[in-house]
Length: 317
Image (cartoon, rainbow, N blue to C red):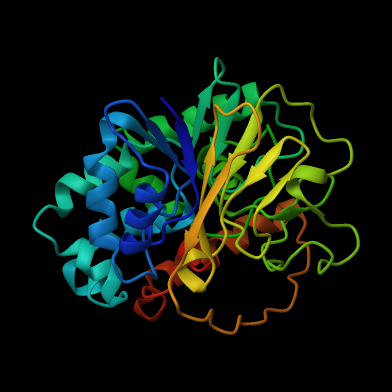
């Protein structure tokens, strides 16, 4: 019996099948952990989602930013849904879309196995979060996702702020937690996320650190496996195993055996498609907390604009 964590699939069904064959996955005895971003960009999102759904009894999934965007778009009108890319439309207008999306909405933001000694998240953890705190905050959002008012969560989750504080409440608290779990790469020692910084370590401005190497960060009692950061590539260090290796853009799809006594990584080539040139955004000035309410109002206005629907903020990374 083996337990494998697998990096971001992003709708790469053929690649995923090759990796499962390469690790000789046997659903009768083996288990899988998927690090999120199951869908979008790979051209085979519906096939990929169906595959992971078919393995639901022997796998664990955490939600990535692309998965949450798909769920949010799934609550919009058919007219608006036709404005997203063809890959996501293939999911939204599939006959089994209600079943697949209902299942996806029940997945976690953090999966923990203390006996095995691992925590899985999509992107990262706030500098001051222990694994216990992270699990508690993940359960907050999961309860809302699975509750009667989940549509309200989707309406309010878009936006780059506010900065995390344990004193936050309501939609701002939800958004801050979601951003940490699904969008974090670099942050300041106080935990302010630099959303515009996506390159490899060394490319960031002074004062920013990869989330796993922030000075003064909390000590954690579990190893962490994550995805999301394809420019980082395969990274093992400081208690973190980052395994998004860019399968959707000519990189590789990576599997990490979690119950191996030594590091055991298996990779297969990804799609033969070059990554698009990233759009450069100027760094956003840090806004004082009291300005956040006005900013959130502008965020909500942008959500309502049809021109923004094809590339929502949560799924743009």
